[in-house]
View 1 (cartoon, rainbow, N blue to C red):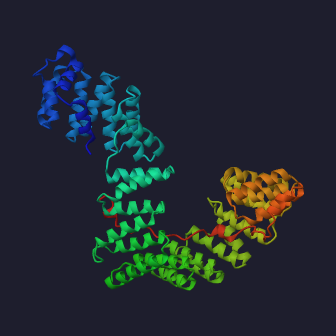
View 2 (view 1 turned 90 degrees about the vertical axis):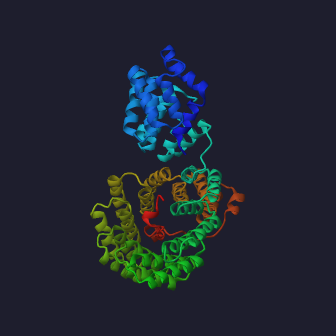
View 3 (view 1 turned 135 degrees about the vertical axis):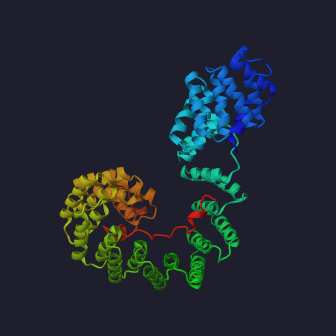
Length: 539
């Protein structure tokens, strides 16, 4: 859509309007017919740009202090693709008449088309302040904010503009992305529904698929990918088949994901090209799919194949070690992490994973050594400290764990994991008052973490603060209704205050959750990225 033309039609919608513009711009300086400025307006409206330029230039020479002539000459130069000259005209118009809102709006539009977002925002905000009812200024400002991913401001300005949203794939993708970021899922669905009926480029198809998957509109996402796949033969674009497999994985259809990824890997093998990394991505996707299907042996085999094809990619080793640890095959996880480090000796993530594997295998001395090396090297993240604290807790050195975490907080600042594990260490060290402060800080940092509320409630109970205990445990259950340890402790708290009814309600036996689960150092699989070629993006 050409927004300059919209602006021109808005300003120059007929002969009467042109006469009015001429009168307003110069009063009696312009004759109703035949003067250079009006001839320029007519030529501009009729897209006779060279004629318009000649007439506006003549008018500008005759009336060099007339800001509106310069503004319209800027519009013309913008249409002719002479942006630098157009910007100079708008800026001159603003200097001649600082209250000329049109010049600010037009300069802001120009800066937006050049993706100079800060300059465009500042200029358009000035235009809006001069003319709060200018729908086009609000519209352009909304587009600027949309490009800047300032979504709340963008939709506010677009709503104020009262302009119809363009039925344009690029805009609708931006809008859907913004609505999802703001939690406005129904608006996002409406934008995506419009997109389903538009012709999409390869890149746009992938973007729309990804957005649909994020909304759990899995069937619609798969339909787009099937349509895209049908439009490419395997010899033209094998990446489409991989991306179809990835869409199935993200949609939770793991059997079909494994099937499509296997077909993709077979196609690559038949082509015989030097595409080891692409094959590795396929085997990684297959391995993740089998893991979700609880087919551990097949998953490990596929993930091992990925590491053999692309050993310098640390993510393949991280996926393999994660699955091995999930299956409690810790000695193999240690070996895999060591092999991964041999190929990627500078990998922070693999050093951390080696420590976690040692910890899971009960090889606490080796785990402590790995984590101390990370901490000693100035670990910029809290994970090395958390790993070390877990080792120290497992080996009954709670006071030392608390000291290490206090040192981590001095170096890294207040972090949820540091506060939470420091609370665990202090509680284990029989220092409940200090543990209380640590858990309170953890809750401040992550108010929606059920385990933090649970452990704060435990500590309040230890200190005899029963009413506070009940409040924290109720919050833990609000966040995690299936939290059995919270129910069990809540039953004890109600029994202590003499509330037999609620004590019976929450009386549910359970085993205590582990103090420091190894999973904190493992995380989830690294899922492959879309494989659409870079030269397809933007087409």
